[in-house]
Image (tube, rainbow, N blue to C red; front, side, top):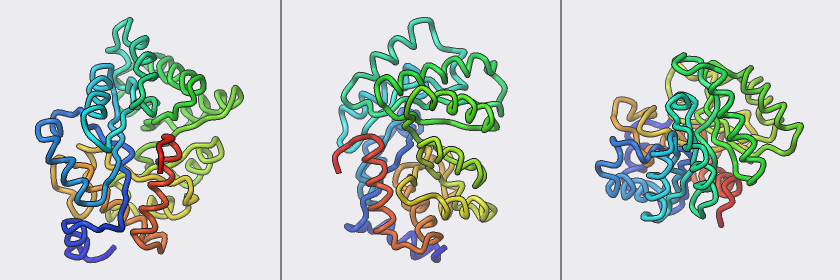
Length: 276
């Protein structure tokens, strides 16, 4: 990594060559909505031209869509997070399906499986993940997939779905192994890295990021969580900080930051089918 002062200086001053895409931001979170105009202005100054606002419940999906309608450079997803699946009301899924047809909704999720918290029965999570997968294949909208201590279960469901037809989507905030990354890549998915790849203890994860094919690689913040180095102690995380994650992986891959930004932004635009 470059010295912190150099990274901070370049991020703060802006760089006209950079065109970054934060592919996973929880803009509906109250930590960010309290001053969203300033949050997005800082992102623009750091070269972040596009942001995917990610829904985790029906309510947050509606909020993300409204943000995307109101503010330039923001797109939205619609979905029910596995940790919120048990809270969903009977009509919520029908409304997610309706939202999926809105122009600014370019992805489904955040969906997936999570066995870390153990608050929602796995069968309930699997039911909602399956709904997202089938709707994704029906509408050709990419999935935004959450994985926490469920790699085998997710791989099984995605492999079964792949027999029905192509898969499109991204394994978001990836922290798995190189072998797991290859399995998801073989299914046709992209791999996205968040702030954890910058942490000192994450050398193995940086090696995974180095090995992912450049045309399948994305970056994100997962804000307001997971602030990267060198702002790890700063809360909340925000889209401007995707700069640091991009700088870290670009160095690992021996690419200029401008080239890395160009390639990963093009990947995101292709995945979400937005004009370059």
